[in-house]
Image (cartoon, rainbow, N blue to C red; front, side, top):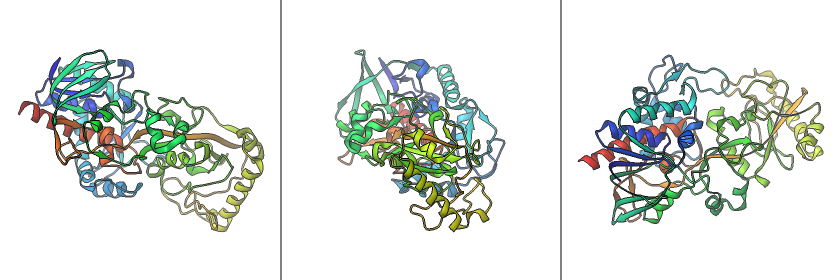
Length: 462
């Protein structure tokens, strides 16, 4: 098989790359490891994209300038890995919505509520799977060839040029340009274990089991330069009762700012009210990953029940804190002491004198408590009490390949691969270090998918 542009992967970054290359007049072949009904990787589970815009419209409630998006990105985790490439991502994000709409994306009206995303993020009508279905229909109309159930098992090289791609069924595919958009290695627990040890066995993977990092390993073995933190990932708190793989967004636990979180010893260990949820929800996967047994428990009372997306598997519910701890298998005395100390710290902080609102940080803080709760602190004192067990749910890993501002994969010797480009999660470590901003993974995939697609066409067709 021969083609102008070969795209490895089937998620958002891959299909955006393919569409862009097709727009440029190239013959395009997409190799998607999953069957058609599971196509799309992690993108199937997404809902929105975060893009800078100067005015609001029917789908966002106000302006979100590039400078503000940049500031938000700098405040999560340790900030951007490569400020130059991160700045490029932010600036190019302004063009993404129009391009997406032109290629089949449909939007839904801005959402209100506690997610705090109505101004900053655009939501896909029908979610990520509907977006991908629209993209795939557009790609098919444009003549893009899609090969499903096709796993890439090897890349062949002649110096700095990839001469071909071998697939599990024995085919050799040759292309003038190759775009690697096959995701990270979050489903490879053995690989994660190199950096996390036995803790990796307690992780859940929110997306498909297909993302084992096979193509990433091929690139690194061929001399690609690494980018991103080895232990870096986008991970959230998910219901510990959810599937080990592919649970998606429905298994995420959104109650954390509304109550407290304790570990298996019944003790709090982190500030549940550090910042608004879209900036801090992704820190909780890492927080729980560092706790004994990689498990934690979110607790709240009836005052806030129903104020957030309900847990998919329901809650443990009891009339007393002691009974709730017993249901969870926790030390009743430890949990009772933790709740008592928290309630006393809320009283000392004078939190009850401020109105409780999740629209923004409200300053309702504890006093004399370690760790503190910096916002949204109110007593847990109104039964029935509720709880859910949580584990780290990894969306994608940040360790990947380094790229140029043209998405070309860099080599450890200081050069580049002549015809190999990367987009999406496989190169997200160029942008993200240790934190995450809601909707920004789709931003990276869309921006760099367009860059990779265009540069691959330029190389292939001259």
